[in-house]
Image 1 (cartoon, rainbow, N blue to C red):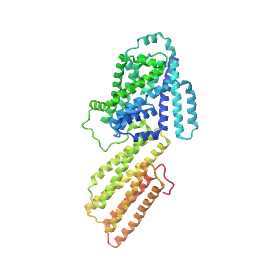
Image 2 (cartoon, rainbow, N blue to C red):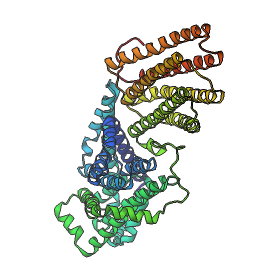
Image 3 (tube, one colour):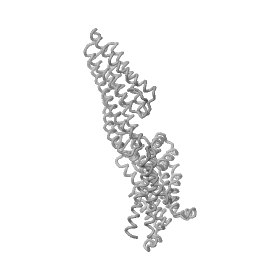
Image 4 (cartoon, rainbow, N blue to C red):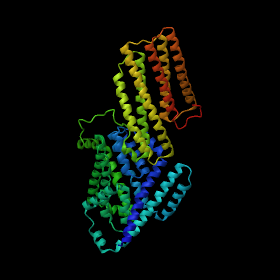
Length: 543
């Protein structure tokens, strides 16, 4: 074994790990919209959650990334523990697809795959094709890395030291510890499984020892999710603990099976392909563990609750991001989907404040003043929280559609914050009207009510259009009409107000309040129209 062999082994390991990474990233970006759809369809049905976990992990080629993402979902409250355990089970099965690919030993096709992938990357015009090119390149790099590792380890077959090691390699505890350490260090059970397959293919790790390494690798992959749960809410910590419990219990079950049943002999009778044997053990571990523990998923949830008890001082409050956190950034399509929900939450808060403040003003009441002030603080918190998150997401490798959407959201968040400010103006005006007992003329009050209702309709339609990222011709025409109506009302009602002042129907104090209110309504209408116009498929109408 020479220095050159070691260098080639490390180079091969690097190519394997990077190949798996960009293979997953390419597939993830190519299937971004589908990943979002899967997220939206997530239900409390554990069986469906298992399928979703399997599909997502197969696409992004990392059960660790899926589990960390699930920890983030639970932390933001969009997934409960029952859903989470199902996704985790599915993710563990999904990660076996990489070992199946590796066991096919397609290293002879690696240069062709890399060449095809690079050609697609260089000459493809569409982003989807470029993502496919990235995935194909990663596929080739994966097998090239496997080839480098296996050939560099070949000289060890003649080493007396390794021959002695192979004869005495039967301690299950050492095997489990080695597997756990490798998976924990490289943060990827798929890559660690590839390394094991490369060593086993050269006869350097006997199957009766490799099975315990595999069990350990499944435990080691839990380390990343446990680390990622530090500083998160209680249920997020429980999710990471459930992941660890699933693999630890699975390991106990399979250690017993390996000791008391001729497990490895059965595997060797099925196939003499060493890499396929490793893959089959990996598949059986995760599939059988899921079948055994699936009916007892609720017990796993309860056990995690015992291990991680509820904190007495932990309360759900408004001043936190409900749908997105830094853990989401590991999976860009999901981060985009979740930031959209956070923006929609901000939009609904701004809309509610505008509605309540306007009604208070029209009814000469200030009963919602404190509520509006609190909600405005939440809106400002979201503005300061969403904007930095948008910067982080924008720096990720996004699809063309997602990148354009994030660019639009920057502007929308600013418009929503300004609508919140105008709502506060209206709320303060309402309190001023109550304190000073200001009265509008019947004509003036009717005009304000008409303008409020038109502006609110414009705002509601705009929020719906942006949330759905869809604006058809009829809706766009309606929005243009509503905005024009609000602008006409401002001009006409201000002139009407001047006429009322000249006829002494309205006093100066009420007149100032009237003018300011009309101005706030018109500005809200402008910001609402800005929001509506930040959609992906707006028709070609004059703005």
